[in-house]
Image (cartoon, rainbow over all chains, first blue to last red; front, side, top):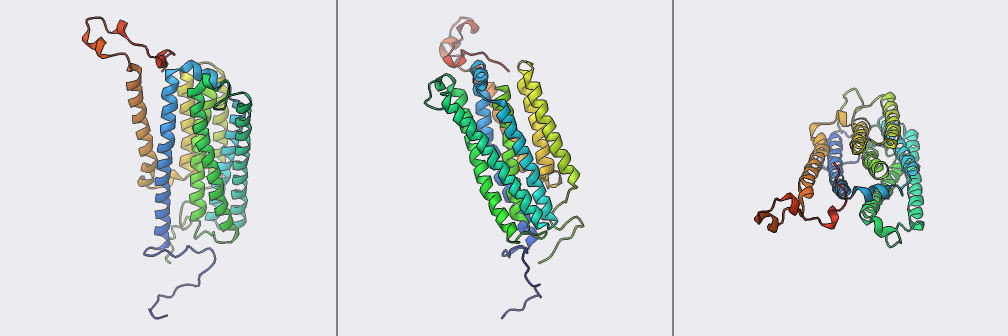
Length: 215
Length: 130
């Protein structure tokens, strides 16, 4: 080496990756701030949809009430439980990462991803049933509830897209953990993926009562 | 690479398992409560109560699962500012919408009492609640 180095410790698996111009703690804080800023934009995105739903609902309460009865609150409630549990296991995955417990990280991330899959299966059951009842766009009963179902499909659709993306992000964190690249010194990918996943859960916490219960 | 040892784990607060477990149980309980309350008819209060309980659940997820309770004020602002903007948006919508179509130029320049001249667009044919 041509330049003098402070004695750098032997690189171990699970070390934070080298980032130019900052130490690993700053990189971690920067990543966290960046992710929270991104979550802020997600909140703004769904805020607009929620505001639209609220105002259209106040303009035509009866239609919204009748339309919401076409939704099965038991399936929606089941999905809520599934997502809440997945948030629980996701939080435990970060906890395990903070303690350097690799197999526990992998296990909890895996359970979280499975829960996401279950959520999507239940969602597709709901969508299919809507289709068979003529409540899909273009279906025979759709035009009676256009204002409600237009928002329903956009809101649950964009949320479902976020679930799919979340599965990918958490899957990537899972692969990193399996390779041993996650440790108590470096678990940024896990925590960032889990924070994103918590937001997906947060959105559903509001979607469920809004769409299924209050109507 | 320097390690920042604050005694609690180098990078962040490590919470006891009970915090996660109790938060999860509280979330489940609040979900059940939300569903049960929706079975009763409190009129327009159903909406308010459901949203309030949902906000409590969201608070639990944000504060404990997302560790927001232990984060810096800058991080708090990332969640707080969009929420404030949402409220401003809602306030703006609910100030504007109920009066749409009611005060047309014909109404405003006539001598007739304004209420009886209210123009009803089809969008307003439904009932207004809240």
